[in-house]
Image (cartoon, rainbow, N blue to C red; front, side, top):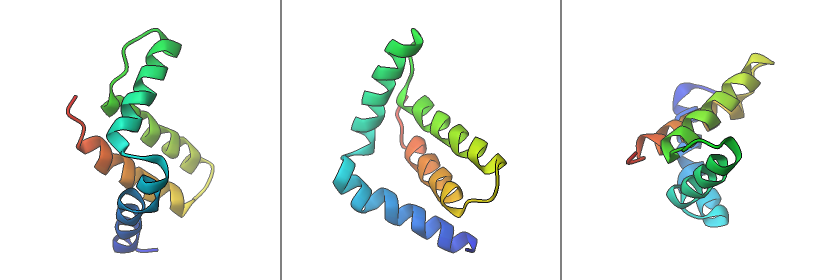
Amino acid sequence: MNRREILGKAQTIIDGDRQKDYGDWSDNAEDIASMWTVILGSNVSARQVALCMIALKMVRLKRGPHEDSFVDICGYAALGGESDD
């Protein structure tokens, strides 16, 4: 998969069925941040949720090349870039 395909697939995912199935990213990120805040005992922002999800994908890539992880990193980066916090 080349860079345009990776970016295109990421855009399709974040703008397509995933949003329809799971709802708006900003709402989900806030909900995840609230849960992680309770679990970790430290305030977590929506932007930090995106960064942590990117980190998760990076750790998975350490184990071997998985195109979907690169796609997901692009998606989380785009969504995290929209965060207001």
